Amino acid sequence: MTKMFDLARIDAAAEALGRPIAEAEGLPGAFYGADFYALEQQRLFPTSWCAVAVGQAIPNPGDMLPIDVAGWPILIVRNRDGGIAAFHNICRHRGIRLVAGACNTPRIRCPWHSWTYGLDGALLATPELGGAGVSQVEGFDKASLGLKPIPVGRWLDLVFVNIDGMAPPFADYIAPVEALFADHDLADLRYGMPIVDEYAGNWKIAMEGGIEDYHLTFAHPELEAHLFRNSTPCVALGSYTGVATEVAAEGAAPDQLAWTARLPPLKTRAGAPLPYLHALTIFPTGTILIAADHVMLGTLLPDGPTRTRVDIHLYFDGEAASDPALADARTGTLAMWHTVLPQDMPFIAAAQAAAGVRDAAGIATRFSPYWEAGVRGFQQMVLDAVR
Image (tube, rainbow, N blue to C red; front, side):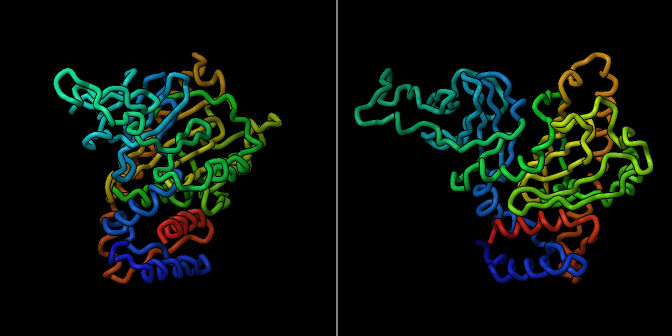
């Protein structure tokens, strides 16, 4: 642990955060800086089930995607049997990163010395290991030198990894999420389109902004959030946190949905329209929004302490993903998000800019008791992960 963030300092932040929410104080500004990020690199990201991609990013056998998870180089691979595997993206010879960009290839070849691995991570070839034209050396055990694997979990199309392999079983980790959406009929979700961007702020600031409805009326007029200012905290510490919002417009008929109902509505297993919109983080890096008529799945991954990569994907129910008659509705939904998500950029950048000085000024952040219980839950999970 870094000297700056000894246990006493983290305990003090936890005490202030754990007060009754009307009195609670948010994480100090320094917790959004480089020293705390270094602690997260050691204690949070490698020990957690981190959402890192969607399966649709590697749809075909041989597809592979290199991903940086807070400095940890990961390689996600679609196997020949259609399954997904993950490995440390590091050659077992001299430690070079193996794959630089998304690609499709039947084998993984190191560009430096041409050591070659299969899609299952097995070391297949070590050309000229024993000299010119000699690729086998007595006593050299290729079988023990495959790529180092990383456990993988799947929920809907989100792909999760546990870098150190020591987290509880994925089934236990994801069980609260599955229970939350047990009455949702999400079996026929089909891929729509991606939204990729970047925020100039710490990953926590970016995630906090996406799991509260407080700012919607003020910052995102396109969403007509004044129609549904009726949020309920949705928090399961250790798993997810965020907000649930009724999707019916205030004062409207029961079948008149607010905000995003351009497409045929998603349904419960009983065949009724979904009663709530959920905007959550699946802690720490997964982001999910289940709206009236579409689902957003994605990741917010740190790119250093002050930048966040946004990788979000839209999914629609059944034929709504491809029906030509609904093309304008799908385009309108995508256009809405291309407008709304960048609107958060200046707020995230401004919060990051102030994080470095607000502690010195004696300014602690506070929470709206009505709107921001999910944000406090997120911050509590961050502290629990690093203590």
